Amino acid sequence: MFGIASETKKNLLSEIHLPESFESLWLDRLNSTDHRYLKDLRINVQNVLKSQNLTKKEALLLALGVAINEKAAPAVTAGIEAAAKEQGAEEKEIQEVAACVSLMNANNVFYRFRHFMDSETYNTMPAGIKMSIMVNPVLGKEFFELLSLAISAVNGCEMCVTSHEASVRQHGASQARVFDAIRLAAIFKSFLTLI
Image (tube, rainbow, N blue to C red; front, side):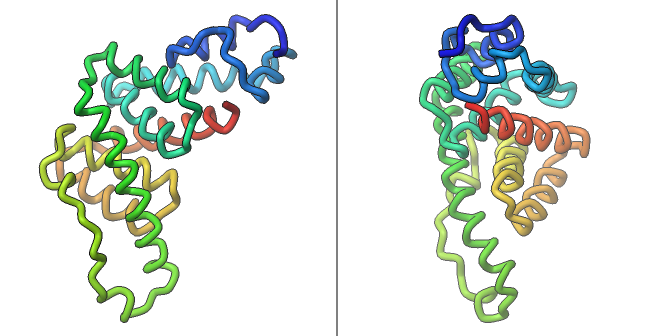
């Protein structure tokens, strides 16, 4: 589309197993001028995938969750999934990431409504949303809560963010781990905006 990929674009795409020939309107336009923001984005993506408080597998599973949430192009989601599998992610874990993202989208809409309305009537009505995957998740309770927190942050649900942050901390996560997960979600959302 816009010529040969710069080293910056190649390195950025290689982080999530996309070929250098991958085309994206905004990424390619930034690449055509070797724009300094493309360099920042590459550094940001590389840094969040090398977090001190997340394993590479966990970082990639969180990135996959954000990609699913943001309805990224199939090639992007497949690339992140392949990278996660290289780090030992199993099919059942990949499927649970997708299920968690779907559940968080339901919960985020529902609980944002409750929060916006601040009505005793709405707040006392049962949610009626089945959430059995939260009881004994394949990913483990702490990481499932961390993923739920990251997706809720991306979706802007204050009630869910508060609830999942408290839960993940109860399950042993440090504030540094929570911070790294949220930073990763923010950076991948920014990256996916250009894809």
